[in-house]
Length: 116
Length: 119
Image: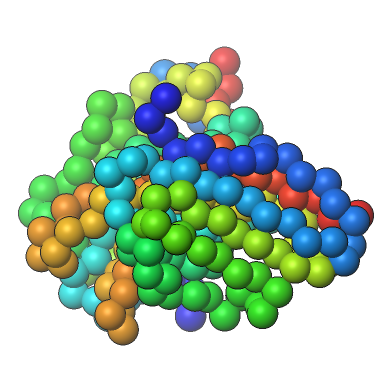
């Protein structure tokens, strides 16, 4: 079974609109972390936002917010007021602590295109 | 520049040759990770160091791959007898880790990657 699933290979959004990128996860670690990264065409991975499994509130960082639904094991990224510069690949990742070490697992990504 | 750096940025080699990549993490970070990313995919975990100790090694890492972090600072990833299937972007990341209960974010900061092409 996939540990991190991103079901949207590609998404389009109109500039200034909001967009939600989906991510579901699976783990047996009770204390895990969820991350979203942005990878522009230049290739660097840019950290966007983090949600801890015990966090009571949804994480927010500027225009990014994470819709964390623990019971459904989903951690969707919401980008508000999309900008042209938001066009990139977006990866959801999970950190879990299993067998005495930390493991980071990435999804396959969603390519977002913001339209002018 | 206090970010993660990788060298070289690009490497073209012939099949069968050995290659070595270097990663310099953020100086205060005790954890260092290597990933491989192929086109259209997310990063795949290869190996992970806490200080100088290599704590985890993926099954993806064949015997031709070896990584070191001799003084707990920079790390090298060597691929021996390269194959065309090794062509990929090799990413290094570092993070600051603490106790499990106070792990906090522990987000990884990535370097720009080394793009390997095996002819």
